[in-house]
Length: 131
Image (cartoon, rainbow, N blue to C red; front, side, top):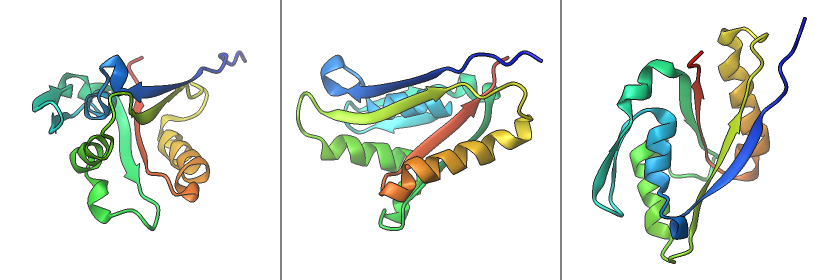
C-alpha cells in the first residue's frame, strides 16, 4: 500500500497584506459572512459541496456567542486596531486517503482540542474533500 506524503502549511492572516479574518473564514467554511470592518459580504457558498464537516471549538473562558462564525471573526477584526495586525492563523493539512471519511472530523477535533483549545484558543475548522 502506498501512503501519500504529508502536507502541512501554516499561515497568518495579516491586515498589512490586505487580508481579512472574516473573508478567510468565509472561504474556509464555504459560507456567506458580512465583514463589519470593510462593510462587505464575503460569499463562498459555491464551495459548500466540498465541505465534509465544520465547527467551532471554544475553551471554557470564551464567550458562548463566539460559536457563531460571523460574530467571532468580526470581534477579532474589531479588537485589532493596528494596520499591521495579525488576525488569525490558518492551518492547511492533508488527511490520509487511507483514513475512512467518517473518521476525519473526530481526528481534526481531537487535534484542535489538544493543540489549541486546551491552551485557551478558539479553533474554527472545516474539512474539505474536493477529490
